[in-house]
Length: 64
Image 1 (cartoon, helix red, strand yellow):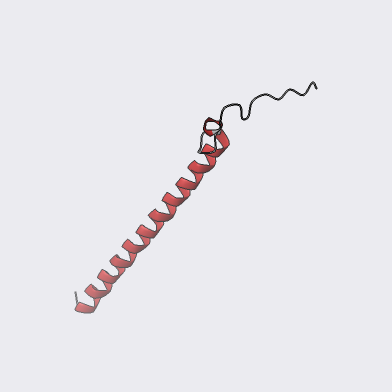
Image 2: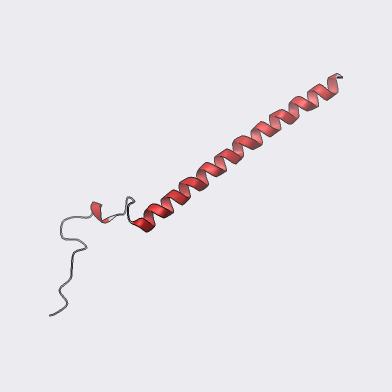
């Protein structure tokens, strides 16, 4: 194997490694966004009623 083939092979491996790292980062960000969306829909996120003060979000008397 000549020197040029070895160098181009090594550069291709480095580029492939970089692409894999970027892809893994995108997948993780997407998974985090999906988790946040599900937690929001389920009401179990940081905006849930558990963080509200006493009496907030209770029943409202509309008979008056």
